[in-house]
Length: 243
Image (cartoon, rainbow, N blue to C red; front, side, top):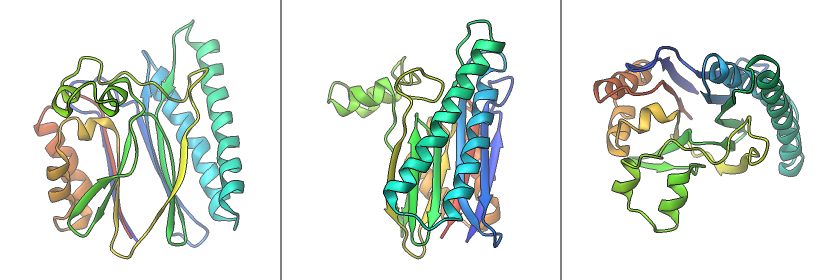
């Protein structure tokens, strides 16, 4: 399995509040891919995403070292999710003087020929199979709900003033639990993990074309540079994994 990853502040932010990690198993193979997009002023977002990635990395290591069923897997993951949420809430209460701190969290845990997806917020996982790109996650956002309900069009969603309004995230007192589900992995599949700084500035077709370019080692860099060329309005984090 090969992978390419990069995180960039972008052109219009003072600091990078994204965090990410690729967790290696005991044999040195990638066992999980994690990204988080922090939210909040000062150091709030940066610390929230750091907490989420650090704790989720521990969860991934525990998952790949044990052969357990999906229900036990969900229980294990939710245990760590609750720890993350409590840590973020405690950090905000003790260090931010009432300011809120939160983060998205999107992860893929490799379990033989399946990918266990853990997802809360509006970061995304795409799968490229052959020459087709598919989004595997659903945005937990106000605009996504409007779009799903048929109240706005895709074009309206792309330009909606509340398109960054999250309805579910870690650091919320309610509505913080992730979606957890399995996706089959076929030989040749490519999985792309990204924060909204990528897809807000690039169309799916352009993402697909860039991922399919060689050499693989420069794919993450090429994606980030193209997003910056088209605005770079937010932090940009991408992980691309070839199965």
